[in-house]
Amino acid sequence: MSAIEVLHSVNETANVVAGVIPNPPPQQPPGTEGVTTILSWLKWIGYVVVGGAIIVGGVLIAVSFRRGEGHDALPKVIWPMAGAIVIGGGAALIGILAGA
Picture 1 (tube, rainbow, N blue to C red):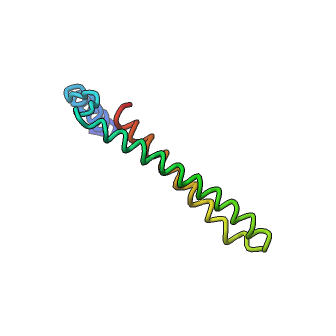
Picture 2 (cartoon, helix red, strand yellow; picture 1 turned 60 degrees about the horizontal axis):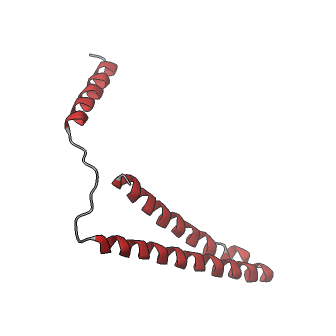
Picture 3 (cartoon, rainbow, N blue to C red; picture 1 turned 30 degrees about the vertical axis):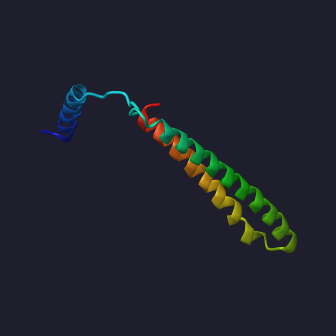
């Protein structure tokens, strides 16, 4: 048996097994509506903190470039931007995984 035949057999088996396994849609348990509200608030707070950090970092960069020390201030803007990407990406990933 060649490698291509083995891969073809594995693919067919996976398709059969995937057809047998039920895939119900996600459903929030009753009484947990507050959890969604708290997660929404945490996401909003995260965006506010990141936005404030980017603004403060921008001011520090402007002051540092005036003094000739701009290379030290760049990470103060880059890391909050990375934080915003992680917050937004995490929320999007949960939405994708939950099927929302």
